[in-house]
Length: 233
Image (tube, rainbow, N blue to C red; front, side, top):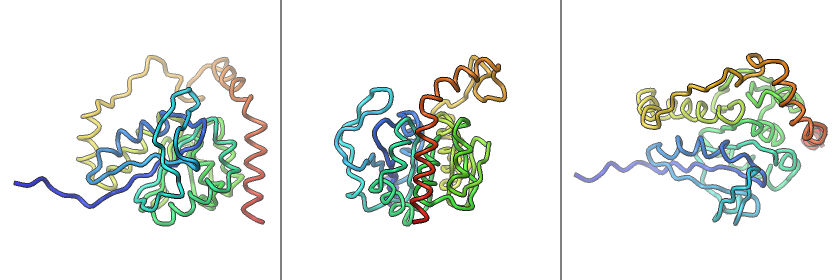
């Protein structure tokens, strides 16, 4: 008996320099197991891509050469600030999102969807420290870990990408398939601390994280305002 053949299901990760690798490698582990899935890592220039942690990915495809996309995933990272003002990157997001059956993001990737004009009037998740910036793009910030608006699925910070991906898989292949996949990956979060959300962390822990992120703060907020203004001109 020949193996079952599934129709192609191209999954495109729209990357950029200084992206957070877990933002896309977490969902990639999930999406790669969808029937017919074929994963493409792409950036504006293609070639080598260095993440914010220093890990370098090779053979990244130029976004302009990506023509097929059933599922688009936009991760976040330190490089979000620059990517919000990269016309070539944002143009590729718009082009790929227009043909995708599903548009997804992780962490501050939703700010990039916003900068591309894809979130107007829609609820969206984001990393807690940057969530309110979504309003700059006429989106509605939502504190949920995974937020769905039609074919748009957005996840909160970094690790929420796995939850988002499983939610999308359940939509595509059914809840039983998604649950089987979750078990196969032994995805059973049991963190040693309960500080994964600012509401649960001690004030001094939240303050320490904010001090670290403040280094990005002013530049990112200014970039978001400029990106939002560019959408109206």
